[in-house]
Image (cartoon, rainbow, N blue to C red; front, side):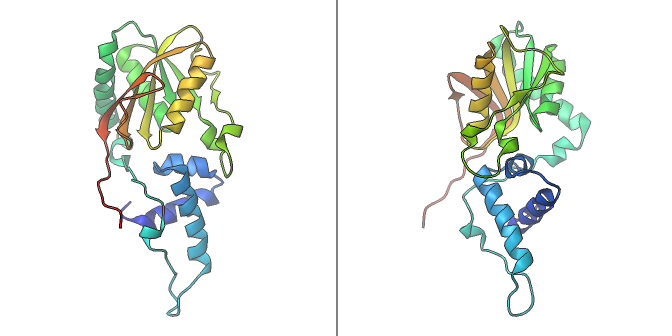
Length: 218
């Protein structure tokens, strides 16, 4: 994806396939607010035309401030994914080798967590966050779920894996959900962290990349 217009087009395609705005945010690695703006903007571009008959597009500056992380060059290649998972697993080894559970945050965190779990020789669990149901309104009214097809959480120390941290809301939700199930998260690891977080809810955050926007308000 090269620019905002590409993201708008992708958001329109995902919305047409029936994905919620929260799922679109997950797919495009942007915030929920950005996903909403992209979906709304995609509707405007299909309905509005300028005087020359071309589609009208919004200036990117009118949208929310966000950073899009495209890691598809890694995700589409199993060898590259394996190498990245090995590096992410290495970040977690400072907590010792006794942890026996790795939890992936769906959707993108699931495949990465699978490879990390293999690297660390742990069991695997997955968590589907509330944002996958989110369209509009208060996300706190929704709830996430642990899949019953994978390992149980109760009374176990664990690691949490996701692809990106955008605002920290999903990671915080996952930490709280694990504790509510009787588990204890020892550390979180992601490919990219847009917030530059060192910890969340008392749990250390590790990332291969910290993406920081540097700019001046006009």
